[in-house]
Length: 118
Image (cartoon, rainbow, N blue to C red; front, side, top):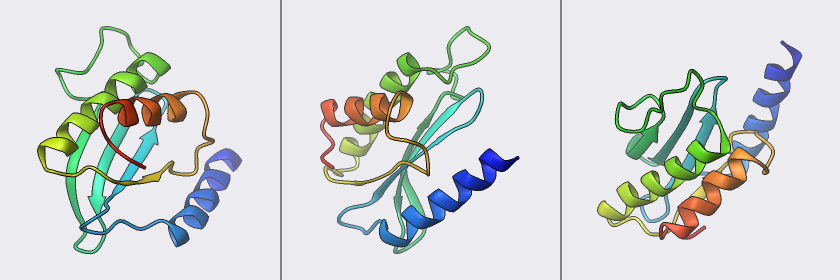
């Protein structure tokens, strides 16, 4: 329980400084125990522009848990591809209170390799 509380506090601290606009939306990531979620959000209107997650049938693997580095890389490339289809090239990265290593870093690096700039 304490870990979740610290995560929320860190995320709130990050969100005070990181906000998405129409020109530069926010790439928000979330990692649950089993799945990974990534969204490109325009906070000025409160709309999700592009999204990808391991819950989708085309992305989901055969394993019980899909929250690993390999899936994070796959998801980063997928969210970059979907963003570029909507003519979004630059984003602000919101790590969601998670430390920038492991899955978070893998997703960010894959999104950069896919063509997103942040």
